[in-house]
Image 1: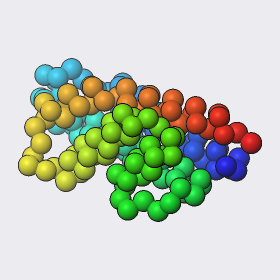
Image 2: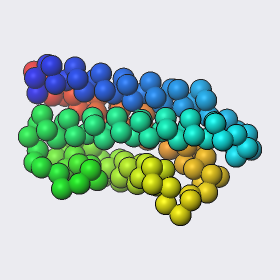
Image 3: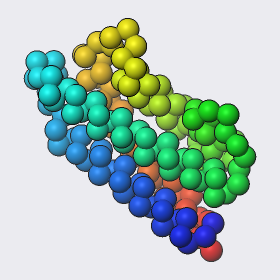
Length: 143
């Protein structure tokens, strides 16, 4: 992988973690979250862009490493797992995050705000795990 590609990936990871940090700083307790529309929408939008960054990093690796053409955004994670860039469990968590993002964007069945809050609280670690996995991969494949 060329250095410019590595730097773009590291930059996108930093962007993603910036969003995660913002979310951690703004995410209120459950009751306040349920009462405050502005907080809910801010948290939802922030997690959306964090997940988009995560998908973009994954796509950048698939592309720069010439691992094939994904058939969907979810298949990007399958490609990373298949090529042993990330463990299967991590890939599954990322697919779940991507699905959560779709639910937020499309407001499927008017998703319950308490479920959104639960997911916001309980899936932030997935971003840290992803960052660690990708950084480890990039460090092992330095040229």
